[in-house]
Image (cartoon, rainbow, N blue to C red; front, side, top):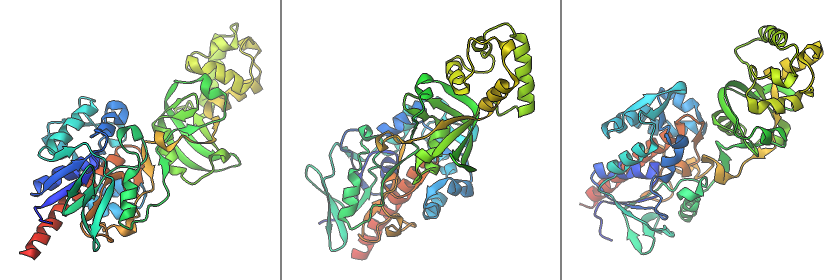
Length: 419
């Protein structure tokens, strides 16, 4: 096979397009295979269509927010940091802003701007709508990929994503290609995924978003909290979702969720004494009203009926007849509204996939396979994942950049050896 500095990227997502653009700039001829014409589709829907493309943090904080195999990413993060990602997108014409939790978004709040920028970055690569059916290797060296036809290549970058959001093209098919080269794929599970609850109160509050609340995940038997956070969550017909819930799910991998409960502090800015004084004041103002009509200043309207069922206090009872114990019950509910958990939603609904190609079989300094020369990996299909907040796209960009650069250098070195 004649070598012409050809790099083949399998997967047109964030990692794949970043890898393609980087390899192009290093002098390689690049072809991208994206089997469902879904190039960057997942990027376009992230962050509710706003695209939280990285986190404006330092290297140590970045490492701390990776759930699985953080040290493996040290070189990739060092070579292409959040600062580098932000500089690249600014250069590509996407002004950025940093919001709460150091989350970075386009100033326009449009993920489509990020998509267009990545396409500009990879302009010059040939993009083919083809499914990569098999990896072609010979004597421990990659030779190409079989799609509709045989695509010969001197280096192949697998960046096919995980199994989450299969409609975007991330259907897990890339794992089979990795296995063909002898790689181990660790067990796959959903991460950054909504949680289910058997509570009938959740469907009653479907669509209700709670902001600026404090969340704890506890064993039903009590004990030290497994996870704590402050921010936003939402009730659904099946349970709970939202930023805090997605982050919590990453902490709960491997646990039996039916032994756990969420505890929500609806009034985190008030200690119990201050809140009790607030209740006494509200009750005095609404002494002759029905209890259900006196809760509007304390709770969202969509939560009032659920709170009545939760506390067991009659909504038609006059406020001036509420007992001290009932007031204490309401106080405890406002400071610790509990929701039992039952499980994770399916992996197809997860933001990312936990598990993937074993990192012990990948060189962290180049992203090249230790088992097959010329084969590189990038993005979500590697066994690394992180909490919500832009960290997972940073993993995609960092590993994509390193894989693209390394693949081009690998070809150049190989040609030098031949010469």
